[in-house]
Image (tube, rainbow, N blue to C red; front, side, top):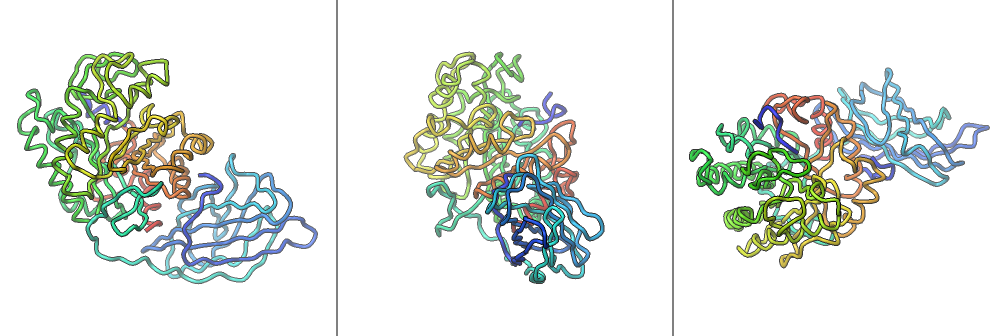
Length: 490
């Protein structure tokens, strides 16, 4: 996503991880056809809050729409939910189907999740109603166990194994966290290295959200020290600032993702953002052959001895905005060169993978799709080859993107996820709320994929999705959704 203008010039089948599960087997009241089984779970708990979920199985006649109700025995209050419309009146909680998951066939199941506050004790509900039918069951288990709070260790050395990310011990891992914008624009505008503090206290505030990954956008002209960049923010000074921030993240056990965001190349075609200059002052449709391979050679040389650092090759390619041929756009994406509608010589994704691997770096590499990283339809067909076998797909999603529905994700993302790991490098919405990312996270959770919220910066809704209102980690209304969800997964 672009930096803000002021600084520039759930799917029904989603599965919940279950801990402290209570199975409530329910029979229909006399004279009704519907019967159901509900599995209630408190998956995790922290001071004053917890994440829970219900898995509903329809054992009776097919249901065209559903409403599930239950009463909390204690002081619990639902704060957000996904895979359904959640509400609470007194102790009674109601969750009603979304437009896309209303039908439940005989024998069919669906899951819906929520986060809630609690105090005193956190007992499970004892009974549920499906579409008004009372189904009595046995009380569930008591309070879930708080998750362990081990001190942060070193971040994992991630690599690809099939369609999963694993660590050095072969354990499956997910990258869950935030973006920290600033490194792409502050230096080129002559203001500094980052937008806001990057000291240990600020990193600890990020870690307190149970973040395990931070994506750090960069500027190639600042890294390479080109003459038009203020020298105090360029070259070795810029590189050292990035290295220091990476080290600070790793000190808290956080995986750093270094990502190329703003690049050189004059572009005047469709969706041009700064057509009057070639400098790296905005997003360009593709990386350039003039500087980008040199950037990645230098970055890879800098971090190749630290395999915990992840490389994200290019923020949001959009060569499809420069040509009407989707095949030509994907060919440009992979091979570069002279691309239709683009004024400069392009560095394709294959050349950037080659630049990284030529240094001997074996780090995990993320490769985004087209349409601002939102279109993944031909990613598998055109993906670059990697001698290290350590490539993952990168996808971005916002509520205003074309591919922003579960049906599109099932069609376009699921085939990619079946073969390679997928990292949603940016998730967000321009509504100042979190209903959209709730659906995104639920869908990705159900498939073991990774995601990073945009962005850990104190902007406002008019200038882009901002997760925080201060660098102590106070969430915005939008940020509450990501924070509570990540804490619930920990």
